[in-house]
Image (tube, rainbow over all chains, first blue to last red; front, side):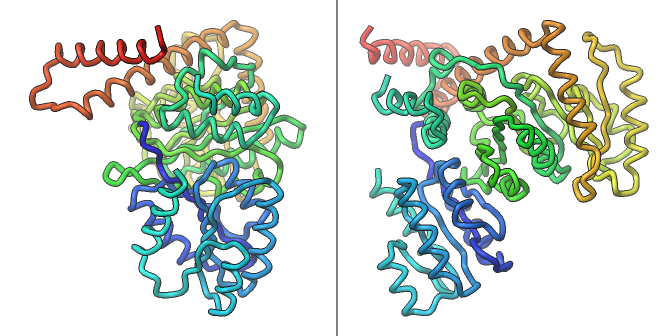
Length: 133
Length: 305
């Protein structure tokens, strides 16, 4: 078993309770052969970073539909920096185009809006993990 | 030993969660294999929880582990979920039920079963040793949701808890050999639902007829996670069993069993890899033995000896 499995944390930060999208993405990543750790709803950025460290994941995926994406991502990235955790973070959800640009400048790797093909997410994660090795 | 592992072990010894997490990954990927020769167990209790899917294993761990955390103990959870036999991917969802623990400094690790059969993952032996050596005083090990015959948990845990719940069937199911025989403690979860009392009576009846080799009297505890009931009694049962293991000398036997299991699963893993990469149409049993010898010799040469 020398081949390295890709491990992904799928998390829902903040106060929105809609996790259909997160589950659909998690399922697609599972079917692409990845090991997906799902945290469940209403996680604080602190909890998400802690989980990412303990689970030793290669990638974090956040699902945000609450509109609080700027604050949540800012907080998450700053805790990651503080803890020295340097892994890509993807965001999916309802994100206005201007905000998506700002998130990327902030350090988010990619932002996926409604209608993004699942295969694109799978490919992006695969290629970024291949780069890191 | 690889330099990376050496450096990680230094951090691990200083109590760094990140180093522990990295080392677990290296165990899972077969890169760090000789854990038992490098890391010593430190004597924390390994509590195994098994039972069918949806019986409440993760929720029980959430309630039970919290009690130990509140007493100031260092607690870890290792939770296994199945890998797909087709894509080898996995959806690991045990953390969802353990949200309270994650804010209290508990180390939680989700693990895919990968090639493991018997309800565990093949790297479990090594990973448990890493957790024990890290100094956790209680380590909760959750199996995949099991059916009737996945009994490997009895080979690695000090204390085995079997989770049952209303609706699992009649006494005929409970009389079947396998999982029903291996527990030290039986939990009837979801006891707020109708039918829990009946199961309790059936289990107690079966246990009363059982000839047991040990002096431990197996317990039956009713719990309800929604009503937060029964966990004090469950904690007492877990503590009593731990005390029994130490006083009776049974603990040493369980540790030996664990070591044996870890060696066997490592070895089986090796054989599996060789067979998977071989041309099975032409492979004879003697041929397999030869391939295994070649592999051992090449490992020996790699180590420079």
